[in-house]
Amino acid sequence: MVPYEKEFLQILQEELVPALGCTEPIAIAFAGAKAREVLGGFPTKINVKCSGSLLKNIKCVSVPNTKLHGVEASVLSGLIAGDSSKGMEVLSNFSESDVLEVEKLQKKAICKVELLKSPLNLHFIVRYENSEGSSEVEIQNLHTNITRILKNNVVLYEAENDLLKYYGVLTDRSFFSVENIYEFAKKANIDDLKIIMGPQVILNMEIAEEGFSKQYGVSIGEAILNFDKTTFGKMKAFAASASEARMCGSSLPVITNSGSGNQGIASSVPVIVYAIENKIPEEEMYRALALSNLLTIYQKNHIGRLSAFCGAISASCGAGAAVTYLAGGGLDQIKMTVVNSLADASGIVCDGAKASCASKIASSLESAFIGHYIAMNKKVYPPYSGILGKDADETITYVGRIAKDGMKDMNDVILEVMMENKESC
Image 1 (cartoon, rainbow, N blue to C red):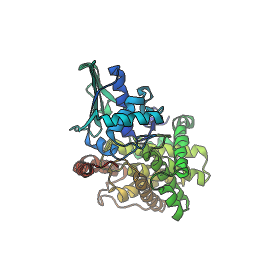
Image 2: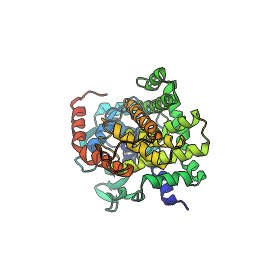
Image 3: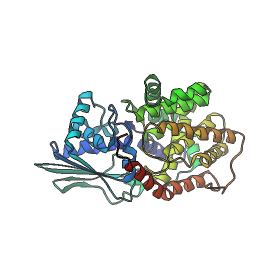
Image 4: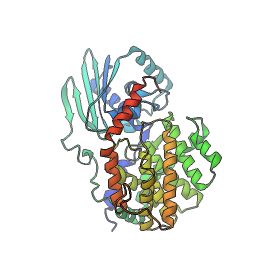
């Protein structure tokens, strides 16, 4: 019997979900589509209140299938062509004619966007009004976690008051540790792992290939391959290529991790490329993906969905540990990789979703690869140096505290700087 096998599988199912486009604008589009369904008609007035971290992550990233940016474009896209039953793929049927409709509505200026003062990093409210009435949809903590629905100011639905415990909808993760994750990844039923992570292998590699085939952003993947054609260069290039395509409006979906497509990409694509390049058996690749994804989730569990701490660090750390596993490293070396990686890259900040996230993934992976090489030599940075704890688990806890609590003011200042520039991205 594998310890916590059922729980780990449930957590992977909860966190590895498909999304079309950056998850923050998609969340707004999802709420916009739901509010239209509740209203039962077309609004003449729209009000969207968003937490600061949400505004930061939406300002400069493309709504999928468009070159539009921002909260207004996101909610109008959901209004025009969204299907809330599709969750994070709410805009999968979005067309060129729908883009024109969104642009027409933008000119009518029916949408007002406001800052929502909230202790939660992911918190927003979409309100529609017309001559017949009003609707309101509130989401907290998770991108599609509706916590309240109103019609004509009457509550139709309200979540129970336990939202801050495991976000109210997720499996308990109190048993997480690097060792438990390692034991699960090594011994879990391989067919279960393939069912859950098979789509991640297919979809996340497809968007990486698309990033090379089309001109997205600054073509960071191609640039990396121009100066680094090693296996590790390819791992960085493919992950960056996938991220850049996604940030710049690709219509292809990805499998996310902890609510983020970029984290889903960084925790999977490098591992897949390493396995392909080194002719690793498929079963071992899936076990490594389980390790990488769960280590990412473990770290994000301490940080939260949104932060001033770049999520690529957590995902790349997971990928580095998975490479150590595939290279024959044992549990101790995997723990060393985690510590070495977090000792290096934990200063990268999140200044919102945009094309340069791809470069941050490449930088975070570089740190993870260095951490991997050091660990394979059975070396690790000493405990209690800087932000490191006595071991990998305590280090993850400390980094989580820094990201969640210590970087609150930094998050506010980053948002202020971004909002000072009123120009569109």
